[in-house]
Image (cartoon, rainbow, N blue to C red):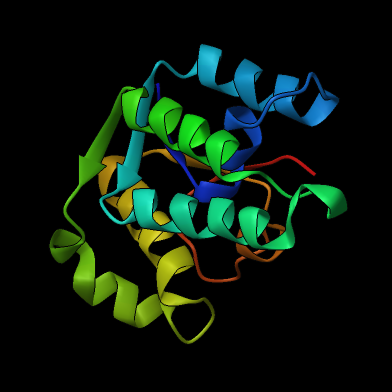
Length: 137
């Protein structure tokens, strides 16, 4: 089975800590051994980690060294990256209901016949997606 993994789920598993939500994400990934992402996912993860660094460790954010460790871990994960140019038309259709980034995950999932693993309630509640979601909240 194949799963498209969105940035929220990737960040959750990349951060340290044994939480129920992290365990749930890992359980889904173990059950779906083929992991697919749009090619821009690394940028989204970098952005999320960067926001953690900007918040600073005193307020629950990451230190720069921790952020670099997270990014190295993500870079080493066995994702198949999909060129979003192959789903541009569908992304544009989905943008009436989703951000371009979320639309990309959905369009890629539709193209490869996969589910989307996400922590994003709005994406998982999509009224227009032609794919299933695994929403972990």
